[in-house]
Amino acid sequence: MKATILKLDDQGRGICYVNNKITFVSHTLPNEEVDLELIKENSKYQIGKVKEIIKASPNRLKSLCPYYEQCGGCQLLHTSYEETLKFKENKIKDILNKFADININSISITPSPNFHYRNKITLKISAGKYGYYSEDSHTLIPITKCLLVKEEINNFIPHIGEFNIQNGQIIIRSNYNQELLIAITSTDSITIPQNLTKYKVAGIVHNGKTIYGSNSFIEILNKKFFEISYDSFFQINNDITSIILDTIKKQIPTNQIVLDLYCGVGLLGIGTYNNNKKLYGIEIIPNAILNAIKNSKMNKIPNVYYHLGDVSKIIAKINDQIDIVIVDPPRRGLDQKTINTILNIQPNQIIYMSCDPITLARDLKILKEKYKIESIQAFDMFPYTYHVESVCLLKLR
Ligand SMILES: C[S@@+](CC[C@H](N)C(=O)[O-])C[C@H]1O[C@@H](n2cnc3c(N)ncnc32)[C@H](O)[C@@H]1O
Image (tube, rainbow, N blue to C red):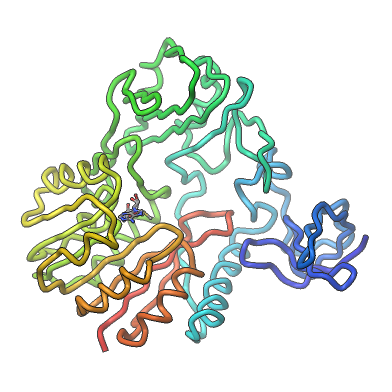
């Protein structure tokens, strides 16, 4: 059936109407005329799949990725990079307007300096084959490389078969020195491949147990050193993270007491350190907080207090006059208890880094009662996907 794409939704899918029902169609662009088949239908919406593009948008490009049609990893490889940036700027603007009543004329997005940006890949393994899951399903799309990951990770992918894993998951990370840190989750007993020295493998961890080398490696960003364990979070795109660290650092005056919530390995607090009076951090993953403690020592940051645990429970126990709170929560954003405690602490500034504009908007709607939104900046942490990172500076009214 034929339809005209009206606009993109916030997941980068084209929106059209078929039989008067809203229909989402991946890999399409506004104003395109398409012939589609319906692959899912429920009472509220339909999902369509393109059979043929009848009239293509002038912004359409041929995707450089051979897996793009089946793989669910990227959503915007069929258009120019400039168009993906415009999509993300409008997405943040619309969501802030719709969910938080925040009206900004335009929001500027800092492009990613690099397209082979991912320092980590997570591949599923099924019946000895490895790859990504297809969009909205658990069908494995076998791959031998991914356009978005760093070269040293791509070079290693063809060797995954040598581990003899039948079913499970493999995560490969790389650092500034092209070293690889590999984490495997599988009930199979695995073989350690020969020739690992050729690939600078820093360590292999199987179900949490180190079976080769170390369970962590060192990353260097903005001249700071960060130990990262196999199960610690680290931002995926080093080049844009480096720009974000510079941006946040400019927002932190010297001599402040800073609280870094959801601190991971201490990246934001340590990476933006500006002769603070004190630095506190809270993180729930044990290895990550151990990394953060070590990282503060490696970078010679004085007066640091890291706490392991759930932010919502630990934050109220910090008995100090905090000047600046940095928050960088997971996609689900802040919970009500944490927001209430931050409002009680009454820091002069809150710096909210977010990877999900919808939960950011939900939380800003509450915080803006007591805090003025000084700036919102967007950063293209995840090129060619619908995801976007933002940093919002709030000042106490
Ligand atoms: C988006 S990451 C940010 C990490 C760090 N700020 C960085 O930039 O590398 C979110 C972090 O929050 C941690 N986390 C998730 N839920 C948490 C909770 N309830 N309490 C404390 N930390 C949590 C995760 O383990 C992860 O390290």
